[in-house]
Amino acid sequence: MTLTKSKYYFEALDNYPYSLPDCLEALNYALSYDPEDADSLCLMGRIYSEMLTDYEKAKLYFEEAMKCNVANLNTPQYYIKCLLDNEDLQEAEKLIEYALKIKGIDNCRILIHKSLLFEIKFEYNKALKPLKEAKKFAYDQIMIDFLKNREKFIKGKMPGKSNKKRVKKKKGN
Image (cartoon, rainbow, N blue to C red):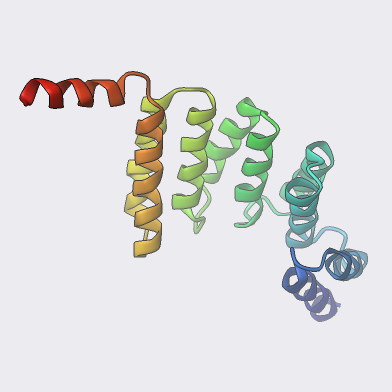
């Protein structure tokens, strides 16, 4: 049974997001074999969150996935993104703090979500701190470059920052 469920889950994952009908068919098969499979429930949550923007339905799938396996490494990052997109900021903040305690989770990506949470709240100085911390957990140049670009982007949104630089340059000339 586990082998069959895994086969259908991987088939669904392989079809996501390019062929949603094939993905959903395989995912429904996987869930019929094991309705408590956290990875399958998470992927269903992603479909509702990322493709259909039905955040409330997505949250139900993510919640179920978390109940079935609280230590699942995939579910928190996608669930956090869903909560942020739906502006459920308090729930997102709690889940971020919980996720950072899960052994083996991608701390870098969770910290990026933490930065996004502060950015959504217009707390730009606070949004920079998780990005700096995320650099400790970034293990390739692409992620380092992404984090640097996010920092630059957030600094550009900060009120008065760009004006101060221009004033200093004019005074120096």
